[in-house]
Image 1 (cartoon, rainbow, N blue to C red):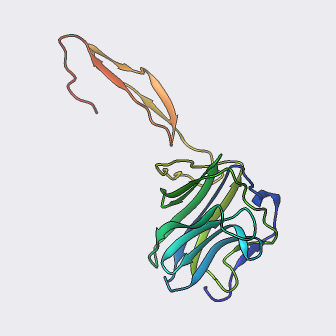
Image 2 (image 1 turned 60 degrees about the vertical axis):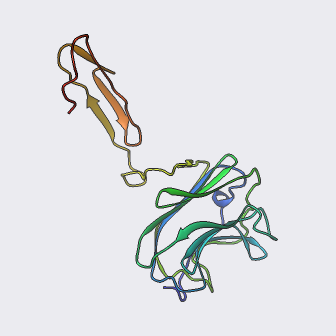
Image 3 (image 1 turned 135 degrees about the vertical axis):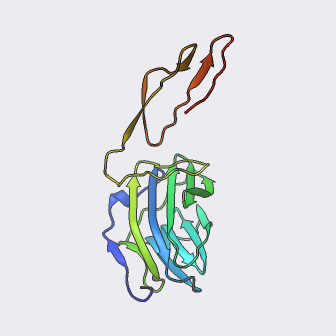
Length: 212
C-alpha cells in the first residue's frame, strides 16, 4: 500500500547467487509515480547495501548490485526505463556466466560483463522495504538459482503457460502436391519457443503456385 506493508522470507542459500547463474522476475503495477524511492526487491548484505535491489525512484525503475558493503560496484543505477502508473510490467534480471542482463516487458534494457560475485545476503529477503514501501501491486515474483532463464541480448518471448506446468509440444505435417518437394518431409515436432524452417523446391519447368 506504499505506507506500511511488505513481505519477508527467511534468508537461504538459494539467495546466495555469488558468481553463478540465476534468474529473478516479477510483474509489477505502480499505483503512482510519486517522488522518492519505492522498493520491489531488497537482499541486504550489510551497511545499507544489497546484493541486489530493484526500486522505483519517481518514474524511473532502477537496478543496484554489489559484491559487498561499501559501493554499488557491479551495477549502479541500472535503468529499466520509466514506468506509468496503473500499467502492468514484467521485470526480469538474469546472470549467464559473466553477463548480467536486465529486462522490462521482455526487452533487454541493460547489460554488464563481470566475473565479480554478488554479495551473500545477511538478512531476511524483502519484497518492499520499510521507509521505501512499494505503492502498487507485485505478482508472480520468482527467483531461480543456477539457471539463466532468458540470457538474450535481443530480449525474449514470454512462456505461454503457467510456471510448473508442462510446455505444449506442437506437431506440423507438410503436405505438398506433385512435381516438387518440401524439406523436412512428414511430421515435425517442436516446442513453443522453437521455430522450424521449410524448404520448398519445384521440379524443372514447374512453379510454386501457393503456400497455405
